Amino acid sequence: MKNIKEILVCGGEGGSVTLIKENETFFYRTDETTFLELTVEFTRENLINTSTVFSSVEKAIDDLVENYNVFSLFPEKLDPKYKTVLQNAYFKNRTENKKKNNECLSEEWLVKLFQIDSVYKKFVNLNIEQIIKASKNVLENYKEDNYTTSYPYFVGFLENSLLDIEKYVVGTNMVYGWMPTILNLDLSDKRQIERVLEKLNKKEKLSMKDFEILKRSINNSIVGMSKFLHFVDPYTYPILDRKIYKFITGKEYATGIDQSITYVAYLNKMTGIIKDERFNSLYISVNSRLGKKLSPMRSLELILFYNK
Image 1 (tube, rainbow, N blue to C red):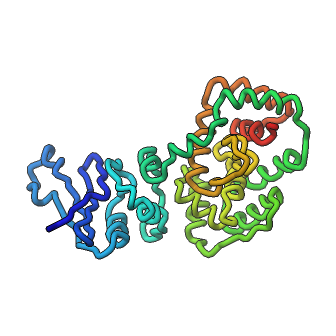
Image 2: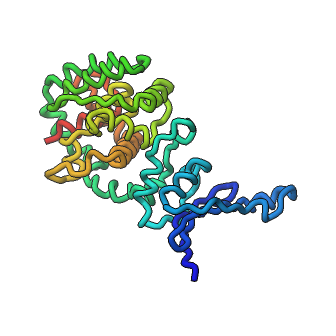
């Protein structure tokens, strides 16, 4: 007796793809019969195809991702048992296919595959109301320190400069002047790092896969990665360190900070706050009090860091 179970079902305008487990084997099926509504060129049989049968789910998923842009489709169904395998498939570097390496996941994928909604729930203090409250203390007690003094020089070195491996090595080591640890920079994945730097040069949106590549290279640290990205583009990428993380979560410890999904969730929330019309007056107040012209993202992150 056959034991058949759907592991993953994804859909798009052209049809759907389904990953199936049958007993102890795995295969996937594509269904593009929606094209029958547009043309009579194909038959139903031509538009439903079944893959080779695989002995492991890892091999089946790897083949599926190689042949179809699965992560650009809508995830209709996902068996939680196979989340880790799918996550590994997403992060796998596919250097022969640049398009697949550039995938930015939709909110639906972020929820179903990486549980970004549960990360959002941890950020109990990351909202405009709490930011306004925290800003009062910062505006009253702010004093210049090494961070604020060196900040414009760091930004000046990296912002709007053409990034390459040499600039990356110097920039990341410079960033660690703000860190209590020594940098262990890993350049073994140089080709992928250069691809991410190219996207930064073009002002293209980075995917979670890109964050993971930089994080693994920079001490496997989200904190170090976020600082490097912020100095490259202070209008887009906020710094996330342990002090900020403890404030936004209301927790004593920074458990979970070094996950790429944490930074994606933080970036999304921070971007939403600076777009809130209530933030504009706060942004003006911060720059006036400091006598500086900071980006909205830096101004917001500064409130989180200096809040007591």
